[in-house]
Length: 267
Image (cartoon, rainbow, N blue to C red; front, side):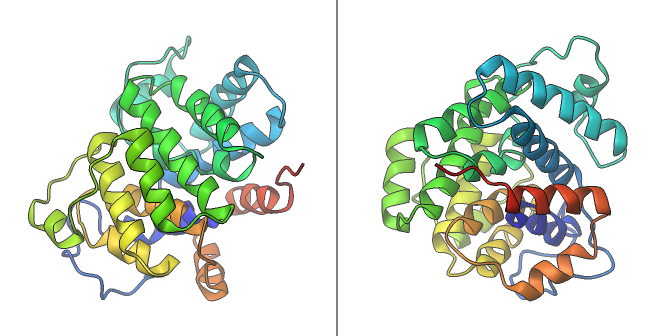
């Protein structure tokens, strides 16, 4: 469960094109920090653990809303988007039709906690629908969780890519170099998911996937969080990376990550 959080921390100092579109950068510096990506990843993880494996849609959604609001209050300055900030502060917490990449950056726990692809996708959809209920927002969350599940259950990248193209319809024909050439800062699922997926498919290790995502520029913390979450499904994260990344997290964030690593659901 460190995949998304480490990607967020590593990518944080390059957001808004602050570092150039390169892969040869220092992973951790004093400018790195966790952002809303890590906070909401922890919120979803805690919500799903509290809801339990057999929870229905209403229970999961209630827990997701409750925990996102709890974590939002504890970390009010984590860098939330304007519409999501309003959602956190609202009284009714109605979905607002978002197709932003927030639905995908926070969903990784769903990729680890369930025993079937169908259940993984179902729960991922529920976590998105409470706010990002646009079809593209839902698709982004489902796709991210599905890639994690498929990777951790032994599917190779060719099989995963074929599944993604058939099930979600993302266009993955571009190379990383081509994506860099047509660069723009775009925080939609429609833009971020293909970038994260291509970073993942062209990578050869967890670190390489994250470096790929950061090298695309723009919304680098979220791109690296999504791609890093996917990569953790099939690559072991080096222990030294985890150890270094932990230095940027407080005890509350660390506690949830450690909890989900020890309390994953099993058959």
